[in-house]
Length: 635
Image (cartoon, rainbow, N blue to C red):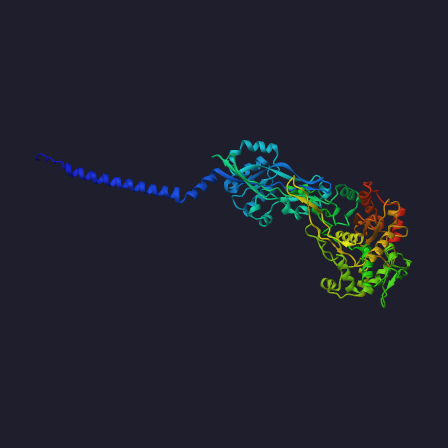
């Protein structure tokens, strides 16, 4: 094999090749730098706002600030509903992640119940992920301390201080103030995004009727956080607007006296100022502790309330209705005068029984032997049924209904509570629509003494009786004034002026005289007014539950409680310048003069004499009971 040939390097070619490669590499670097510059241009200029917002969102978090709910006072400035400091556990789903990962740990730390976990799951599905959701209300100090140790394990979970609603008087005002409860899915739809941070909303009573004013406006804080999500400080805020404070017309002392006056009885009562329509006190018994509902009532407590046969959750004042019995007689008598069907001196003979032509069945009077010749004043004071049987027939059902509607029956009074019913004003149209039956003269006879299809609320009764006391029908209302800020002045809420109950002041005066005679010897309620230090006007009534035979008196105390008559009383005092009108309905109380009237007397004494009621006796005396049966049977 011959010697290898020596290759001579081409220095020029190699240099040219190097230059080409270097140029290519340089072009690649320039291109890369151009792409990088373009990317930075896009980030820094074109998408600056977007990424600045994202960066700020990572560093600055918006924390909603729920306003302090307005405080509710009685007419004398005593607190009926206020707020107390507390801690709650909030979770932001978007930051916390999958609940199955962190829920077991939190459940152990805070002793979460199945109800709380279920409520969280429902709310999480109904709201946006960036909105905090309350998992537990009223966190204890011990639970807060345990959580502080393991806080870093739970991103998106925060302990938040807030003001918790408190009702210092609980059951005493349960059907007046009502209560707030936790926001549910339906509430979220009603509140909208602006108020999605709210944890509580008014559910019943004044809390619900004035929800928008009481809750105020939600604000926000801009909170700076570190990489661990811990708060570093507040860098800005939109202040929350506190809810308006409300001053009610309710007098706390009278409210307590009204409840105590019932003793062991159940029923309802309301007192208003005839000259203004202000509600001075109102109770529906039995009541319940409203504080149970604030943070979610337990199944056991709710079951006990629901299964209670006395229905403590049922507001008898605005949702319930009773047959008014003879408490309607002053108003029917006024209708007779205003319609021209009667004059004050016209008399009707009461023999003890009343018969329609061609009808064998008779309608009894309150005295089996009758009352003899009866004029308007006597018909009210002695509750003479025959007078009203004939009056209603003479007026005719159409005219009768027209006047009863003028006095406010068959429609809500307009009180500032949600859900008020209008009751039932009997009429041929109502009977046909409800039972598919025609109207008979006997139906007119029945409704003339407040029986039959009648259904009225105590609110309707007291409004009408206050109209007789004052001469004008006014809208009953609970809220007198409101203020926006602790140092702000109280602003009265404007109320409609009311309408005259009658075109004739003389006619109204005759009715007052008949009601005054009710409280004097010979009247159905004279016993409870015999030692009064002020003048009273009133009317007893009995809504029968058990039927009678012929015209025989039935002692209601011989019957089981659920079959006893409902005892009623309406009245006002002092007659010269009425400052209070009352309506009392006692379930299973028997006759109006024996049960409802004494309760009303205690209420009037508490208002006019500052006298709290004495504890009720276990039963009324035998003499009082027999007298009541003798004078008030079949009102």
